[in-house]
Image (cartoon, rainbow, N blue to C red):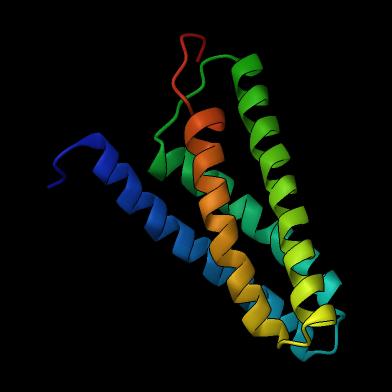
Length: 135
């Protein structure tokens, strides 16, 4: 079906990225619609979507298997480290767009998610799920 592994990987990343973004946006929307501060909503949505993303990226996108506990801990630690960086990017975009530019919270979160998807793919492909000999 797929011409090569890279095209399959990109298609699966897009599919799982869309699903992760849906998880993020639904949680964010539910929280702000109940009166939660948008910053709290960003963090809670981030936590749930990162857990979902780790499982789906490992299993379906990069099909990465770790054979040692050390490799697994490095992979998981680096995944959460880069996702923590993306949380910082998310928060910066939200503060600028909502507090400084006075744009809507939901619109701003969608824009932030587009930037984060690009950042996360690059980090996942080049660092987190790269193929090494010790997995």
